[in-house]
Image (tube, rainbow over all chains, first blue to last red; front, side, top):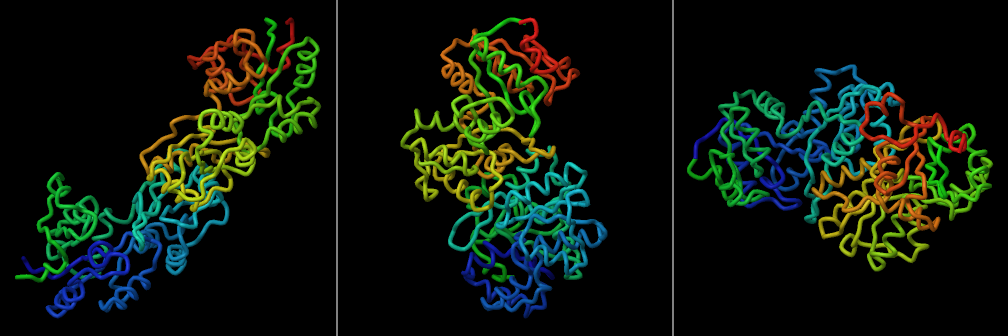
Length: 260
Length: 260
């Protein structure tokens, strides 16, 4: 296995599953850091803050700071801060996303008619009033962007929870409009942010994840080498049936340092 | 204008708009009744009970009992009572629909896994917990039916509120499943129930409404003569552009008795 200067590591299904660390994950991260490699952790979930992720990793024995983590909230807020700093937002999302937006100096709309952008995300606090507000805002000209477009989100205990795709579909049925941008995986913005964080070129980095259609497709599009781990959602049969071919296929993240 | 033994009168946009009676509506109903004609009032909304509609009509000067009114809740509950009496239901809907179901002796599911049918309706009390329950129920095999599939519902004050279509779309995005049955307008069951209420054949009845794609299409499919009124959502230009041709086009419901 080749050595890289930077590693972009997906979290759920790659580094841990729910509360459990994947075998070898701790040792791999420690060894890569010992070698001087840069590491960024990725998540598509917008329902936890980067602080939460850093704390969880640290608790599991992988010391991490919020700066080591990129999630779809951060990519979305970073896009808005740079490209739409004056937009008034209506956020269908959970408190961590709203907090991330406010911390970045972004502004929230108080009325549908003053809304410039409706931001759609995974939201377990979704209710009819939000649908109604967003509908009225979009009919009055607000654009739609989404942090992610996942159908469901796996949570601890094995349940799959309805994710942002169902809210996107509800708004489409109402307004015939779809998000102009989806900022989390597999958007190229995610890996642009990751490589710029590490100060490396894409060709110097390896994207490691468990999902062909997001992690691997995104890594290839960014010009990185890619490694699929079989500890998450992708089975070997699905890999064989797919047109998406990662550069490496690993039984687990532990193999990242074997022979490399 | 021909005389009929029975008249099926759409409510919103035909008899009244919000709190206001259409000009001549009171006199028309009184005159038709004086002539011995049967009358049934129709609504696609499942958020009010037939008692509410009867009270509103009576208050506006058109005496009516709950038996004079057919809405999508009633058609849905009637279908379930006759064809699925033992099914355990999960209802995404407002209290009047749930009450109508319980009054008919139908049973509610307490857990996703025991749910036989998810009933989707207009629901201003919709929230994430309902989406999650319905998603789990459908993934475990529950069927979907809907009281109606309207995109929006006009309410007093002129606002259009998100109706059942957005919830149907959210579930489709999650499960790839659509309602097997939509029981309100333009389902043929609505007019089957109306004619059976009146004890008349469809050919003896006139369907009167303001919507081409629901009221008029449904009336034609049932074998009734149809009259479009221009007091609701349909403009004369839309009528000319449409393939749906009502037998009569009336400026208002008042013309029902002119020369007839």
